[in-house]
Image (cartoon, rainbow, N blue to C red; front, side):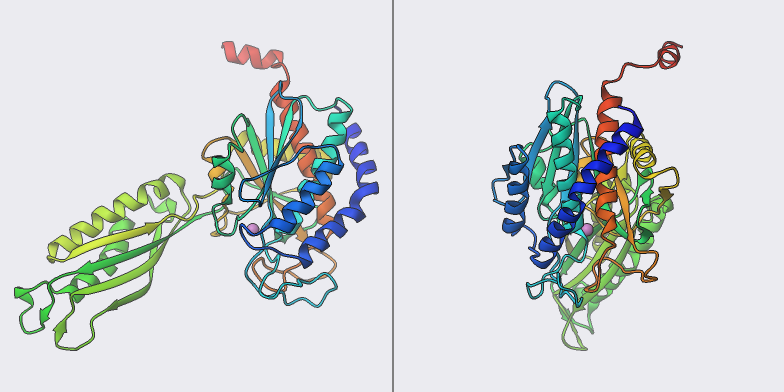
Amino acid sequence: MQGRELRGELDAFLAETEQDLVAFRRDLHSHPELAFAEYRTTQRIAERLTAAGLVPSVLPRGTGLICDVGRGDGPTVALRADIDALPLQDEKELPYRSTVPGSCHACGHDVHTTVLLGTSLFLAQQAAAGLLPGRVRLIFQPAEELPGGALEVMAQGGISGVDRIFGLHCDPRVDVGQIGLKPGPITSACDKLVIRVSGPGGHTARPHLTADLVFALAKILTELPAALSRRVDPRSSLSLVWGRVSAGSAANAIPDDGVAEGTVRCLDENAWHAAPDLIKSLLESVAGAYGVEATMDYTRGVPPVVNDEVSVEMLAEAAERALGASAVVPTQQSLGGEDFAWYLESIPGAFARLGTRSPESGVTYDIHQGTFDVDERAIAMGVRLMATTALTALFEGTRLPAADEITSALA
Ligand code: NI
């Protein structure tokens, strides 16, 4: 399909549905639901998809759903939106503010959900008109903030048979109408580490007859980050920072246990995968030198989202076709986590940043703030982007290779 033709169809679709989509977003915004409790949200999405002739399949826990559009004999492209809210007080004074105390769509997942709903309705029209050269899997994912919803979707076969996956996130630092793109890593990993040390304990007069646990713990606290800085590529920015340490109760008694807790942040996926084993071996060697026992509890967060280059090109092409030549802007890797990363460990895909700042307002919000809000024109922009991206990826997946590509493949 020609770009102009698709753009015209999206114009016509949005002229009819944009106001309705904004109302849908406001309804979700005033009824936020936390991770794995998104029952009402799931029901609202399912109602709208069913009314459009689609057949959504709610995940076994009753929150989140998956729905296929189009034929099964071509390529399959997945589009994912997260649907959960944050445990945070809504501090806005607007008619659509949260009606649930301590719960707020302060990360824009209500916008992501609405964008994917609009995209679903448009793609359903395209499929009915025989214009989809494959299948689009719509993933309305629960519990991104936990995180863990992506793993739940994958455990239910949500991405089996999917060739490529796309998602987006509101970016309040990017103007509405613009799309932030970056190949390679775009978010970061953040894990939690708890270390416990133990020894026989004893009198501070005779450290040589016991194990000097406080001294050993102090060595662990300083040696682990120091050794990591020499054992891991500095470009991966792996950083272990302690947030809590505790041992002992008297000035003249060596305690028999102690604990340290911290976080491990990392920009690089390979370094992230290697981190637990490396930290464990460093811990054992430092603790062993002082005769104390040390154990480690390492809680994985999410890996970094690592965007596939070809998928980013598809997003860029779609953004230009749908939103104009100047719509794509570069974006940086953030230190935040995003569980879309789990999908990209199995299949190629890319994650975009959807501009939500209103240039006229002069206000720049941040996500995870109780005052966070978006310029709602971003909803239509998101629909244009996601629908065009899905069609671009499907057509690229089915098209015959061009003559020059065959020549270069044979060369
Ligand atoms: Ni988020």
